[in-house]
Length: 340
Image (cartoon, rainbow, N blue to C red):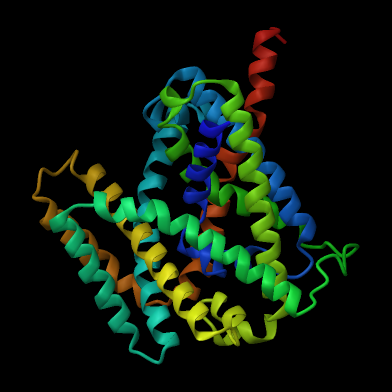
């Protein structure tokens, strides 16, 4: 049970990046008439986690490449391996932009937030990643816990009726691209832990608890965003619209946690890119990291909301094939076993 919950934490950490925590990712896909969409997402996400974890366990993998190739084939796997690289690069400059957008909410220059993020990334290139990510093990659960408290309190105080329009569910299909957006990072992370899973029970626990947890948070978050929908035009980061009117201490804590989530997401992307490029160019880490940052920064000025509005639906479409192959993989293996 405990090991299963450990993998639940890993899955949630993979999902709850700064795009999700800020509310921008959820609002991009869901919004009005989306209760059924979120339920379908929770089901599709649970199945996806189970299939990936089960395959990783059977292959005893410590690298996502064999799992990716097994799911979609070697030729398509090579193509999607490049998409993972592209995903890391685009997420990096989205996070840099998110830092600028956070500063902008305090009437500080956008460029000041960008500069702070660049300085933070340069610092970690010089002094290492382990300490920062070690802190993140505690900061991320705290962020998720605070999100649940804030959203639950907001729903209660505003007397939001979550199931008030349960018969109007025109946006149900949004579950598919939202799930597909997140399956490629799931393959990349869960495909590397197969040799650490000890039993099928861990897989069942991790899949079901992560699906229920993320489905529940997404539902509360989306209902809260719908309630403040008219104000979201003025916020690059929708979470701030919900926090409006909360005690200053809560606001400040949530901003610090969000900035830290943005920072650690950016670090993970940067080091992922550096490790990939190091296979081709044997440069000094500071030079390689500096080059990546220089290439990423101009895109950050396109705007946090604008980047997510364009890139996240795009990756949702690109990853549809991976999601389809994950969902039909159990059917294919069962057919092969019975020689159908």
